Length: 423
Image (cartoon, rainbow, N blue to C red; front, side, top):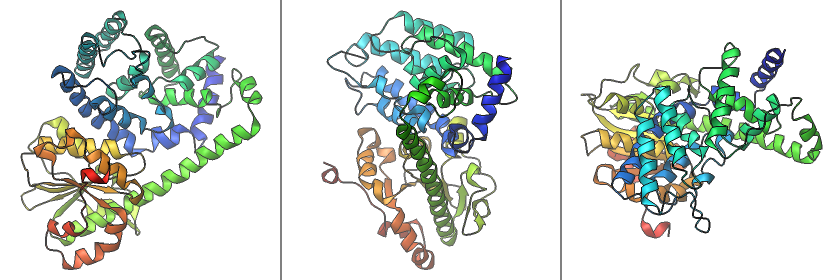
């Protein structure tokens, strides 16, 4: 009987066009890109820990960059970074000032990055938990999800609350043992509802999130939802609706910028590659795939790097299939993952003349400037990273198509940050 009840609620979850199933899990290309970029960025975190250059604060660390990319993944990961903020009065999480704990955390990340065996992954969790590092709890599971999405679900207050309310459980928020108990329950639900959900545990976690946030009503949360102020519920619903509309506008602008870049690249005589998962998107009544090579030519880089590069929004290639320029189109939620993909490309290619560009909304210019001034982006191989504003590309594309001869035509609208601009 409970399985039938859960199945009906899952169908309701999937049929709601504004549920996280439809706005994040199913129809969000940035979610698919995030798995590769977060995995690659995690290598930097491990490297900084091993080289003793990690720092003694969350702010400015490589971990902040990764967690920012995770938090971009919509409502399910709102607040995922909070557990890693350095709280000096409490001295938590104790991975910034305690070198032994920091190295243990680095060893854990390295171990879970380089294995896909469930038994070994669980052993690494138990090993980390046994160290009792103050303040370092199962929030780390949000990193694990992006490494092993079929084995570990995300973890936050709303997900735990939804799980408890649906199944009348009393799972607590702050311990690994509680997380692993919930994980086992979620996997069991996922197996029993395999025709409705996904092997990726993000779907069932999103289902619990919607129950815990009060958007999806079940018997276990009915009293709580009814007790909530009506105006507050309406405000929350309106906020979600506005987020969906904003996402649609951003996706439209994203496709527009890819269209302009592809048209410009072709007019300059370059071959153009548009990220494979964007080929069906349209702008100006034309599918973006019509402006792109059907397949990305083989690149002389490791397989993992090649997979990441294939998700870069737009590439320009010369006659020998060398990458001349790479472009990541930013939105309100994708700046970190975009920089990570360009960072990975720069470190993978033995081609210092490759031009790297962020295409940025005008409203995010100061944030882009600040990010490009991060010390990790000042390495020799990636100093060609600069940015172009949406308004400039939109306004000047026709003229550049008409008069341009090479990638240097972008010099007139390309911008680079100066330290004084963001001080």
